[in-house]
Image 1 (cartoon, helix red, strand yellow):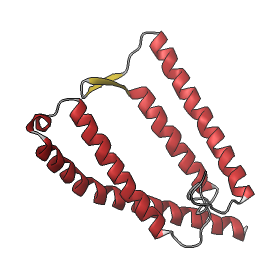
Image 2 (cartoon, rainbow, N blue to C red; image 1 turned 90 degrees about the vertical axis):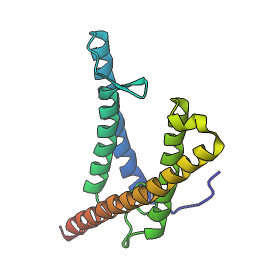
Image 3 (tube, rainbow, N blue to C red; image 1 turned 30 degrees about the horizontal axis):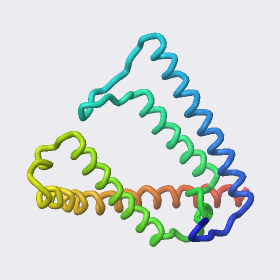
Length: 168
């Protein structure tokens, strides 16, 4: 059940589906290449926080996401929702999205630090709450500003591309 109903433009939905299909193929090819590297015994590991992050998989996921964003912008769309072809920038929507992203990032970082045994974990609940509050105070504004800047740049580029295709 969707809480917020958004207008669906069939052309936008079809275009987004094509873009995500290409992104999925890109992601699948990258993961298959990583599996081949692992089968050949070539390991590209980076030790972080006591665990291992496979740099090839991380790079492939990030590149697939970036690839989809670039394809959407080239088609004149800034997002895959009702604001895909908006005439004015939806500040409130992306302000809330940035703030929620910052809160989610703070929670994930705090949980990871607790799980890996950060020094402040053994100091009790007040120390944990203080560290979490500090992370919120630093992460939420930074994430919100970055989301607003990146989505606004995407909006301006997509709008310029739409104007260019409409003139032709």
